[in-house]
Amino acid sequence: ISLEKLNQIVGEKQQFVPIEYSKEMTLGGAVATNFWGASKMRFGAPRDLVTGVDAVLSDGRLVRGGGKVVKNVSGYDLPKVFTGSFGSLGLITRVTIRLRPQNASTQIWQIATDAQNAARIAFHVLDGAFEPTILRVVSTRNASVVLAQFDGAPSSVESQISQLKNEWGASESKSLSPFGDEPFVLRVVLPLRSAPHFANRILESGATTSAWDAGSGLVRASFRDLLDVHVLRAEAKQLGGWLVVDRAPVQHKTPDFVWGAPEAGNLALMRRLKEKFDPAGIFAPGRYVGGL
Image: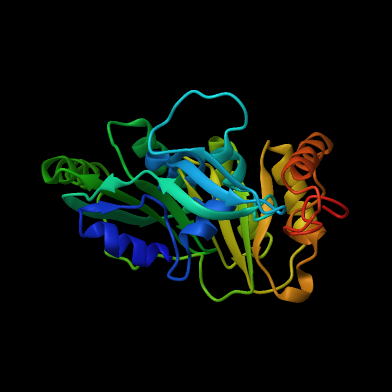
């Protein structure tokens, strides 16, 4: 089921699934990839939201973990093992996920400025008496926009918006988006205080647009032309982060280009899990072995 359709269904009960999504994204896709965006700072990632999974293993066995409530149990925490496994361990057939009540009020505040001042404003909001659901800085080479979304009781939302307008002003400029039609899109997760610098570094390397999320350290950027992803990945690693390619033409989608070389310790753990859950290597063969 698509997240759009699922939200329509649970919306009839004044609930919603607290995962950012595109129009085509499915619940299974979001869980399998542990996909998260700027709202992670308030709601968490799918790995934090999934409380139960059923899955079919390659030998036909049905395994079940978790449930409607969180309990302390022995053995594998299957919801966390399968969330983010990219289909390599088994076929997820059922998911139990936390919902959130619909917000009584939602408002967005934004202001156009330069990149350096944008970072100062974003950290002011993050460290101040505010509770944004989303706090994002989007930049091109010529402009930056700080965007903060507030959800909750109308009086609380209005108070926070008013305070920001009084302190920094506001602008009606159209929001910039890094999710256009460019053929290459990068996704980088960094320590939060390193995110603004790296977002600007990506622009210098030729990105059309970059965006970083305060509260999560997520940086995304889009490119029109082929880039030297290995250099940027090495720089991200030096800062304590990691970089993957979210979007690229199929001819460039080699494991080395998309994921980079795996860490030895991580690869050993991934292989042990693969051997435990899928010894025949039926699901996503080669994803965690060989070149990856």
